[in-house]
Image (cartoon, rainbow, N blue to C red):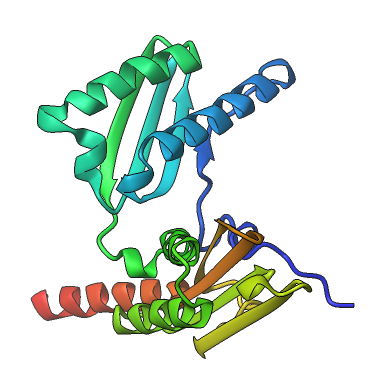
Length: 227
């Protein structure tokens, strides 16, 4: 049988970067890992309406840098940055760090973020929207936003049937075994009357290394023209 590997973990260090950036010895590693889980869970639960795409955590000694990527950053920032200041204080208590800094960045194209797309589909399923309609709408929006390919899967007691099943739709390409392919992956859960439905989304944005080569070639051409 074929074995499936996590699309992001498979590409770490090539086209994807780590979400937690720090080093620790064996004694502190477990504690810091649990802190990271707490931080992400707290931010995602507190700002559900903000569309949290990612929480990147960097540690250097007693300093902790937290970068929040959101589709609606205004909700996290608050009026005149009041909400961010409050968040700084809360996270300082969670991490026991002396210096905690929170930065908030906007996700410019939420239609191309797999986690946000999955959460949007899950929200529609909870509102009793047809699963096929929700999936096809997400695919259309992603392709219009510039995706090279997208795959959406919903699993569980779809429509309240007795037996759980999986349904998926796909558009464009999805080269899962190509490491240079920039593929985003996200999951979400929908709580329905008949139980939990799982949502998985893969979005292919093109080859990252190919884009880097093009940028290098353009720079070389520009330098040659200036000489």
